Image 1 (spheres, helix red, strand yellow):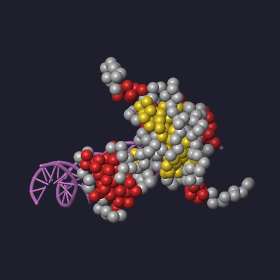
Image 2 (cartoon, protein in one colour):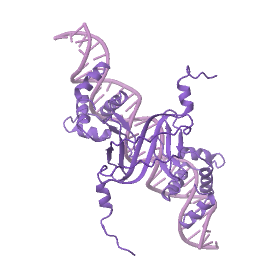
Image 3 (cartoon, protein in one colour):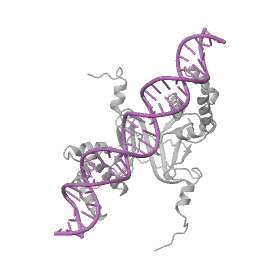
Image 4 (cartoon, protein in one colour):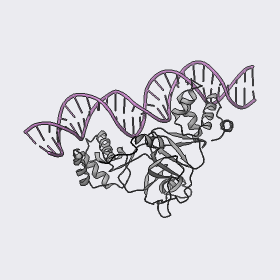
Length: 149
Length: 149
DNA sequence: GTTCTTCTCAACAATCATTGTTGATGAGCA
DNA sequence: TGCTCATCAACAATGATTGTTGAGAAGAAC
């Protein structure tokens, strides 16, 4: 994620105005290593900007995404997640609490084999590991030593 | 996908009744190598069962999915896709037309490295290749691939 | 500073996929 | 045969997201 200052320049260069609301959103995204939904950004921003509207948050997030400064992810958790991390990486998605963790491992062998794919042109490769995060896994097995029947 | 006959037995064994509507859906899924949405199954079934309701289609697809006889996929195309193919495979998703193609390649090296993942327990690994299918790619660059209209 | 343009807000409606509800009818299955 | 469940229709509701409106505020260019 670029700094709020860099994003400010980018917005100006595009003819978009840099409002306090947008700056607030820039900062929230820049400071967060997470994958917030629009709602989450909204809640965070409303803490010190109570009149901010959810509409404006969507607007700004979509602007950033269409400028390529933010990745919009659909990981099957219901809402779109916005990922400020632009370096190539993959995701661990908890099927219980919906939390998302980055995995920066590179998998060089993952590609559509020549001959397969029927002329498909790949522009992005996403690997999603689904399972349970450590805390959900622990909560799921309150008896760590299950009894035999 | 199991045969309609096998699914019939499974439903009976579970105390679920085997109605003409459900049998029709069984057959549609068994005969289709694709990844239909609930709407697509609905449309296909309505052709020779005009009074079938979309509600019933969702009901049956969810029954099948919860029995593990069908995979429910969220590939970011808007609607849930139901995949009758239960063998492990990955997907090519066209970002333009939304079509989905299977890729049966096995990637043995794709795993969360020990030490990474912070205690995450993986239950499923999904690889999604996004890009353009052959026909959408051709349509996108008409000057490079002249076509007849 | 002035002016022009754009953004924001509020409030509301609409969309789309999906699920819930109801009550009546119909049919599967033991 | 009879009990139970499925189906249907019609409608409402959900939740995420986008569209719309008009008014007010403020960024940006001069």
